[in-house]
Image (cartoon, rainbow, N blue to C red; front, side):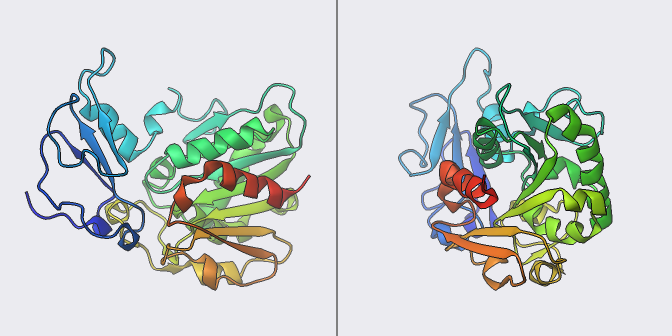
Length: 295
């Protein structure tokens, strides 16, 4: 087996032994820490055993082939979307709903664009926590949505279409836009194209680990930790129209983030510990988002 370079690999699923030293580069070199999933019964030899961040997937009655749940955990949670694939809102967009508890007060709901790996645990857990606080979240899988290229004005039109279908049924009239990684990178380009009425109801934009440059279509190299696309995210943040409230969050070890160089009225920068996933501090990130929005 050829030597692996963690800075170019999103993760690793192995069914048998992997060579010693396969993952010995510092995690900080990667866009995100490489994950190692070991698919096989306990006791099957694997060099990943005992290394922090590895996880063992064993055969079960429901999943006799452990390779399948190991792969899905690595690739994302898009398989958990409902059969209709649009959250029941009739838009045809790849949406999953995280509802707030019935009867929860509040006026806000969120549309959350995932990273290029699809709707994964990072997006899922933060959305659960926000929903539990009374803010329903519509999760959009960027893996599905941006599988074919979209123009910024198309993204803005789709956000408006989803808002038109969902705001009424959710009983919320104030919108929050959230993006992670690629989802956060494309949002600054779409914001100037939002319809005026929707922009007036937009109470905040939260960008989690946006990158310095982006494209508007899924590129396999992005899964391997490479920065893809040529559109300047920092410049787009600087060109945002006045009146927007933007929270830009990034990890101190994330050297590809657009947040440190972002400037403009209404942009709040926050540096957190960790890298691209900010140590997966779901509770801390959710609390930062709700605190940014205020009462």
